[in-house]
Length: 574
Image (cartoon, rainbow, N blue to C red; front, side, top):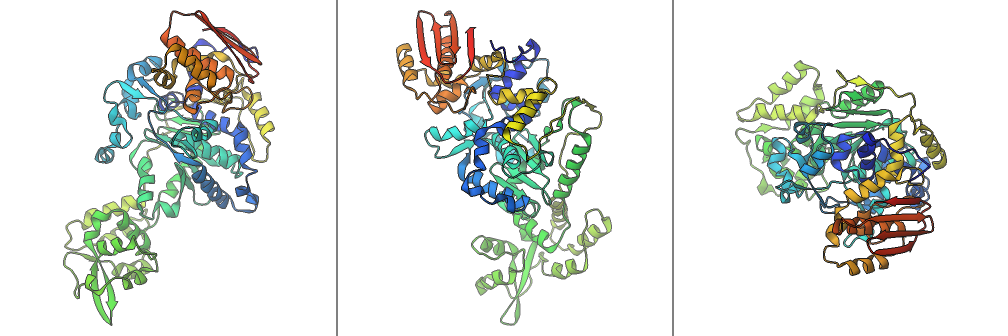
């Protein structure tokens, strides 16, 4: 196989092969894989090339937050969010459960994975979340793979029809963000925490009051409380889901596993910052932002505005409706200008019954602070909101929930902290070569570092067995795509594919990556051929040999030889 790395013990083979496919369930079962992918992206020369892009010129002169903003725009320009569940093919619940039998019971899995029964709470049922994600197509035991892409695979989407740029799903984007914040923006990894929930993955970054990544975009504390539809969508995971995994340079904590490796001090720091990020005092601006988001409560309120020297009144929902097309906002000091834009016939000459007059809160909040930790201050606010509106009490409760979210995080209490002798110590000032050398030196003692080289696809320094296992057991896209091709047509098609890999050096693409992106080095195409032929003709023996210049695949009565630029020595019988 490969003399540059010891063979993987049989009990670890499933984990190490999972580092090559990185499906949603694999990361849930083996949570260390999440940070391993971050490290793999940090080692990627493609990411380091970003530092030379003119877009990042003068980046060092900016504050950390401004650097992150520059990065956000780069990611928006170069990647689109992709959740086409057919991209990486299909599997079955039974097959996946059989792989991990004994590691996690089915009840726990159903509570944490949308492909195994999880649909979220009442909120998600209202959204019809399975239809939203396209899961309604899979009503039987047949389910899609939900795979995470490396940076190279994200970039390679531009080779697929319909993708003018790179692409990736939420875990791909969150791990890319974490790696790029470190490599490009110089944000210490100690300040970056990855959060995985059953339906989403995002990061919390300890910069300023905190920055939350959400797919391609960012959410600051001010944005979290602005009440817009975009922010409402960004809140879904933390507001409605259990955080199953928190991953960090120091380790991870998982909601279902007893063992945890994350540094307790780092986790406590994270919890404090996140809870502070998710909590705000109630002010006039927060009240009006709340009503923007909870539009069903707007009918409890009205606004007074002077027209031609006389007081007039308008339902709040009308003002918010006009706000969409205006540069002015009801929630800041441009409110009067917004109201001046409205026609006089939108107003009433007298106050409306059963509606709270919002104007009185301008003075109230000037005189009173509403800290959610002070019950007497909350009660004072509730008294101000007393009226005949039958929903005023529920409105206050909704407002309190809007101003403070208690995230459902994994608790360290009751867990067993596992301490490793070695620790990852990476600094933004290190070169790529220094980082790779540091991680290589930790491989024997730290599994997350070892797994990072497998996620990095470095077959020059990894046991080939996990790669081959993943390639020949979890590559359904190429099997489906080649269904209409006869054997001779298949050989001709693969012969004509561009002899170009999406990975540099001795790093290899999996067969479905070769098929999806319609290109591959000779060794990669030989593995793709082996995957398809093995499924068609399981009785045939396969011998794959590569000397770093030519790869030869003997299968049945056939033999193909293709040039390869991958310096990987292989001689295996499949």
